[in-house]
Image (tube, rainbow, N blue to C red; front, side):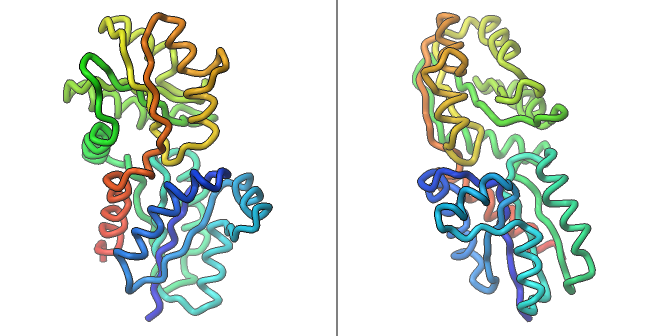
Length: 260
């Protein structure tokens, strides 16, 4: 029986950042599950177009599934690289899953990294290990956020961090989502935090990391924090560059495969 795993990410246009994060996680899945054909798909139209311009093969999830169907695969498992069950996961993973039901003997989708409350705790513990803090530092994590409606996972991540008394403050790039910059700044002032490590709550270190988070422009989070008198140290590494974080995808895929 032909079985496949489709590792499906939003993608990142920067080839170096993609290789260090998404491609590295993909290679680990291939190594961990040799009995399965492991392939990649990308949910971002922009990223696929840029990759194709760079001479890279870049399929959407529907294209990848159609290809597997034509090749006679019977069981297909979609493991998302998305961090949260937000709009992208709902519209580009679950909607496609529903569309393709019945075309395979078995077709299932796995969970994002931060799916349940337990995931939030385990994921944050892993992230803290990736970004060790100096004495007196707090960790400010900047995620993407949802452009059309608030994604409650970011607020839950903050709640879980507070319950565990971790010095972590969650923010998002999207102005329409929460926690926004003002909320993070209010937390830092309330706790009299003077030093932070600013790091991405993102899989790869693309434009959001280089510009929105750590850019020299006045609108970057680094610049805005420094204007408030906070000493900012930055780490530009996306979470996918850390082996410990990539293992979370392996375990999510294992859970998906063992759900029978």
